[in-house]
Amino acid sequence: MKEKILNVKWLSEPNVGTRQIKDGDDKIVITDKTGKRTTLLQDKIKYPFISEVACSLLIQTTLKDIQIDIEEHYVYNGSDIPAGLEFFVGSKEDIRFLKGALPHDYVLEHKAQFKDAFGAELSTAEFRRLTSLMFREVIKNTGTGTIKANIMSWCVDVFQMTLNRRAWK
Image 1 (tube, helix red, strand yellow):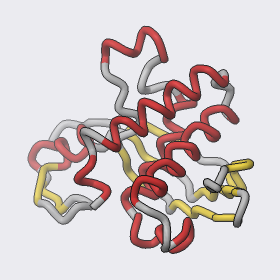
Image 2 (cartoon, rainbow, N blue to C red):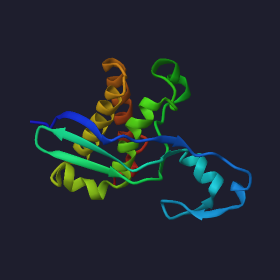
Image 3 (cartoon, helix red, strand yellow):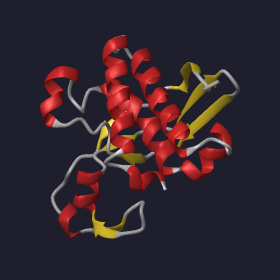
């Protein structure tokens, strides 16, 4: 039987902000979170959103509880919604989607840390499926309707399975 997510709830709510581009950001060279040298401007374009406070999400599954603690100032890219689909599902800057993308992106970026929490014996496909379901439950809890949340979750899973496969290795 596949593990199911029963509930997700924020133990401490995130405060998601947009990283503001400033004059001179193109002249500041940094090492980004992947270890690559880049400009602050390019980093803000690649990761435009920031968790302005530390926050925690509790995921209750049929088998266990998993807590995801996200540090203050964590930067991420948010929901990758193609422009052609925004008419149907909404803007990638919609706070509901940004709150859902926050723990999803965090777990993906720290998958080695969370693989054991979700289950060391899980296949990559099952781990990916559970993170997509986590995204769905978070956006449902922020006011997204069930049908739209299911569509968004399916799109996230398909994107992860196809265009973002490399991130799951």
